[in-house]
Image (cartoon, rainbow, N blue to C red; front, side, top):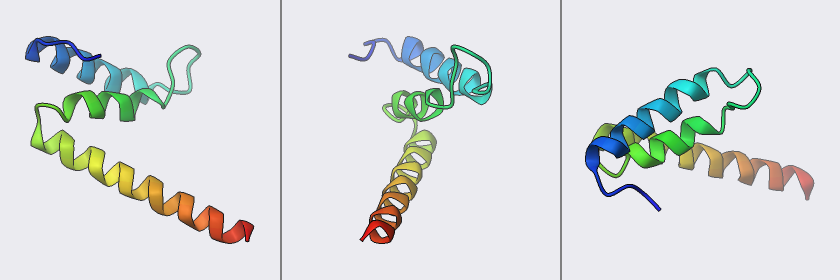
Amino acid sequence: MMPKSRIVRTVLGVSLVILGIFGFLPVVGFWMIPLGFSILAADSPFARRIFRRMKVAWGRMIQKLRKRQK
């Protein structure tokens, strides 16, 4: 469920990306980066492109891992 206000979405998305950079610390994690970009993608074409590239890269990595297991 995403906030209806564009300003709140932008602040939340940017906050998640910035905190995700510090993923080596407890509580925050690298999982916050794609989540932040997915929230930002609702309003920003730049973030939409980055999020799409991350999804494509993730899918290719999963395909390679599945081929190795066979």
